[in-house]
Image 1 (cartoon, rainbow, N blue to C red):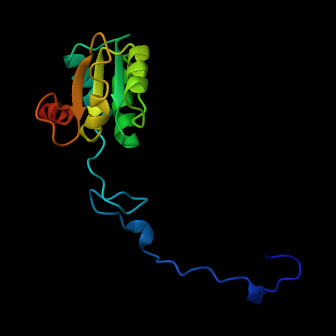
Image 2 (cartoon, rainbow, N blue to C red):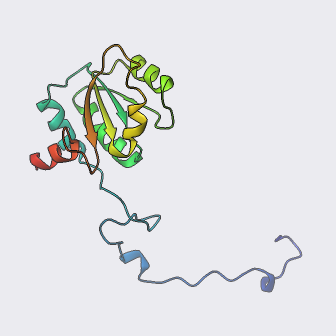
Length: 154
């Protein structure tokens, strides 16, 4: 502990810094802070808003998000909020009746689900009276893929 009686010799020297570090940026597809690979970049909120308008979503429509990447979830939420959509983020750790109850309480007419959480969403099957429309987010979706729909708009 550093106190009144400590000497300058007892204080550790700061680590050496790379002077050019602030000018280097990580390669595309690598997270700036963690240095780990990013699976897919977050969509542009403006593109999500255009997609939502094309799908007929507007003010007061409810959409539920079951997306595990917070960057993607936030970008989708911002895009949907631009056109007045009510967005509910569902907890991906819940499954079965708890997830079904959350979905019913959200009043969503459309659900956007990560392909990685397909098994979690499958636990809702057989527990609802009416199912909202489903769009998949992420690689591996054969139909109703949000990624492909956004790529077509660009």
